[in-house]
Length: 307
Picture: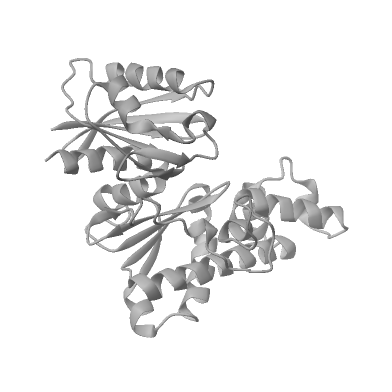
């Protein structure tokens, strides 16, 4: 059975064709932000590219934002203005000419890691996508878990520092403000501007990759930033472990490239706050599927729902 998967991000649409357990085609296009109509045309073009004989009978579309699982309506999508408060499902189905499942991108990526990646064969998994911002997706009992409304998994906005920095969501001290790349870089710039000495003074560009590189080289200030991020992630993971009794936590997104530095710090903070019986059976690993995970998971979900 051939199914299609699309992951609409803030910059690119990633697309895959999935036949049973194998990715048999993939495509990519820069997102056209001007209108929903333009975006739907892109989906149609990608379908023709991946499925020229119109063999596919179902598709999944993953989107960064809050997706109502009952209706496919996007109630929030911070990086895609044309998709805010839009009944996306019927519009996507009209463009693709097949039934469409619409879901959150992190939930889709979590399911992909369970089916094909870093959590193969497991049934109770949390994926934390840590990049510019921080998101999360859950698989429980082997199925993508979207919650009562479809909004489950938003671990980036769990409060870990109640008196902490202001978050883009309007609250304070969210996990995202402690380990999201935007906030890490902002914290580094502010400290350097106030006179803190660090090898990062010479970094060009000063980005999250530069911070992790400096930490690996032993820079004291960069290591403190990483310690703070890892501790916050560990505290959030402890909450998830205690509530859900997970088998594995997968670290994805841009920060997965620095999992060697982050995971020991995450585990240390989580271990101190979790029942030993729960922590002892859980494992922490880096994601395997990279930027295609959302599209693969969307296709896998569509395949499962079509059967």
